[in-house]
Length: 282
Image 1 (cartoon, helix red, strand yellow):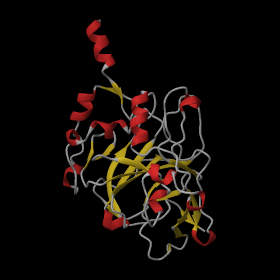
Image 2 (cartoon, rainbow, N blue to C red; image 1 turned 90 degrees about the vertical axis):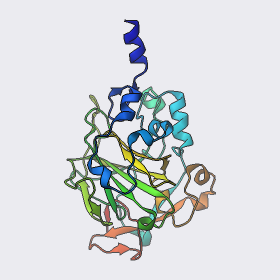
Image 3 (cartoon, rainbow, N blue to C red; image 1 turned 30 degrees about the vertical axis):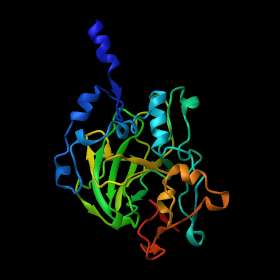
Image 4 (cartoon, rainbow, N blue to C red; image 1 turned 90 degrees about the horizontal axis):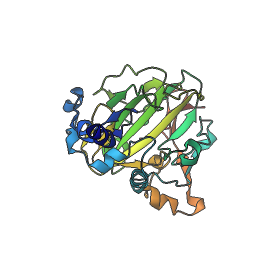
């Protein structure tokens, strides 16, 4: 019994909601397709702090502190769509909101939610490569796809990773598929375990980034080497800063982000953009 208690105490809650020993989680290498993609490394090569970014709920105060240190901090940024376009907007569940009181357990909102009717196409926000597909059957994230974007593809100095969750079904795109900005990568829904609760259809959209090209897929999450979370609004800024703590310090008149997008006719606004909103706009 003592041995069993020690084992249980050493378990961590993974992003899939499963209990798993840290050494087992780190040793996974289930993504054979990933090994052919630029920058891929073994899950063992990823630092422990990056792993802590993906604990969804029930994490310790230390885990929450790590997440805040790695970018999960409210910035006050908000989108203003170029030329007054009518685009699906972010709901009140904004970036980095602290859910601890609401859910009675430590939890930060590591993305933004964009409500849209079930089945609405979701777009690749930049040229990139499919690096992750997860069913997430035991947690609230729901069906998920992730893309990796190089600095050349986005115009940023970072390697960035876009996360799209709560899909209606798994995307047919295979891991390793190269996609162009505006490619349909999935459809909106509200998938994900919520117990007795229900929620509206919406895309949960998140951005991670790293100064390093190395990354891994351990079968549960995508792990950028020494990765950080970025406010998804910040991803569209044309100039730095991009780090959350620096963004939070900006004066109010610099919080607005001019948001690029794809029009219903398939053209981009502005025409030379390398980054777009994940839905089409009128």
